[in-house]
Amino acid sequence: MTISNLLLAISTFLLSGWALLPVSLQFIIGVFAAVCILSILWIALNWAYNIINSHPYNRYMFAAVFSFIFSDILINQLENIYLSYFFFILIGGILLLFLFKDLQVLRCISFIVSGSVLLLSLKLLKLFNPKLAIFQHNLQGNISTKFQYFTNYEWGFDSLNLAYSFGIDGLSIYFIVLTSLLIFICILFIWNDKNFKEYALTLIIIELFLFIIFSVLDLFLFYIFFEAILIPMYLLIGVWGSRERKIRAVYLFFFYTLCGSILFLIAILYIYSITGTLNLEYLLAFNFTETDQKILWLCCFLSFASKIPMFPFHIWLPEAHVEAPTVGSVLLAGILLKLGVYGFLRFSITLFPDASIFFSPFVYLLSIIGVLYASMSAIRQTDLKRIIAYSSVAHMNLVTLGIFSFNVIGIEGAMLQSISHGFVSGGMFLLIGVLYNRYHSRFLYYYGGLVQMMPIYAIFFLIFTFANIAIPGTSSFVGEFLILAGIFKTNVITAIISALGVILCGAYSLWLYNRIIFGNLKIDYTIKFKDMDLKEFIVLAPLFILIFFMGIYPTFFSFYIKIFSASLSFATV
Image (tube, rainbow, N blue to C red):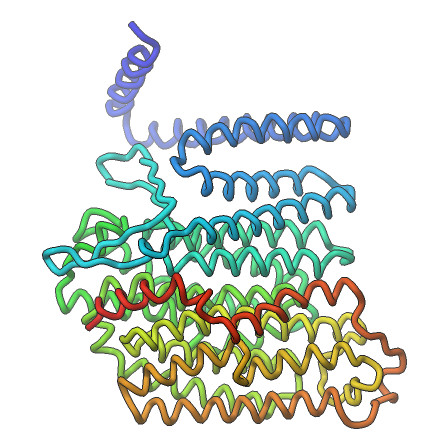
């Protein structure tokens, strides 16, 4: 008799005897067993912690052994070596940041981990095959997909039909690269911060969660990490926020995003009840009834709309931006707002195309209100971060118009604008962070005439302001022009009204630049002036270059997006 057969016989005997016990006795035994297991686990963790910290070399030995075991498991379980590298580096980096305390070592680990992930994501982009970055139609008229770097692993619950699947297509590849770039930039920005370890650990955890969100093809796992991303962001805002209102801001952030996702969870459970699976590739081939599509679309809409955020779910965003540290604002505007865009494109449009068309006038109405309301609100603000926050609301509501234009031009423009917004909004928040690090104030009236003492800063602020306005030659011009052209083909009135948001964006952006950069120096509030140093220049330079590169040569970015958006638009018509 083999060991596996022996264990199977023992477990069968124990389960048969367990069923004969009364319920009260089962409960007592279960509680006792749980207490014993937790006690043993606690003792083992304390023992391991004491051994690791007893000598510095033990940390290196433990990290090496864990890395070897973990990499062996990942490479054997995951069929694709590139996805294995991503998860191995990020999880290994999180563990190493937990173990070490020396600041120089922590900086080295964070730089290597974030830099390696950035290089791997660029390698992934180089090896990506654009011909497979599409949604395809089968003979029955349903949609099928071709995902690259695909891997699948069964959970062992055959009766529940649960498995996790990972894959990358033309939609997710650029979000993955954008995530790795912004995380790397944030690591450099916090290089001299006193809370470097806590910041770096939180940033790497966020990067891991985002990589899973953008590559997972299982609705259940997507929902888990779609909500789990709230935890590290809660810490960034609630613990390391700048003012006392940070608790209120983080409560609003949690309330709006989590409450909206409750209906998304109900929709997932209902989908599983009628299809028997949560795998995206199978769901794309399933024909939902018209009633089911409308109900499920509304459940998903509330979750994704609160992440973008659309009007009237936008209240949490300005509060969260104002109270968050600089890196928190960069990630919030640069990546986390794109989760709603990704959800609409990945699930709402593809799984429920008829419902998407049915509710498109409703989306147009909310998006137009959001663009105009946020733009006019930005003009009235006096907090630097709050101005950029309302600007983000206006731009992201414009993106939703492109998504629901249901044509190649609009969808491609929405995706390009999402990428561009990550560059522009991330750079704007970094520039405000540069001022805040020097003068510890974001109040607009305290600044003026900075061009006289900070000329390099003034040039950077000018370029990012032009990009925010969507001046031709910058990245935002490409996305906004395609969005307006796409929505013009669908609804002329909506296109004309939404174009007013571009004019208002120019008003508050130029007004902001004029108040800060030109005029007289406010020496009553700021006496010591210092232009951007080398670290700040290096942090902002990649975004500076990418804004012009995307504006002058957008084909590089639309190369992978165009086929995907074309096939996606046909799926909704």
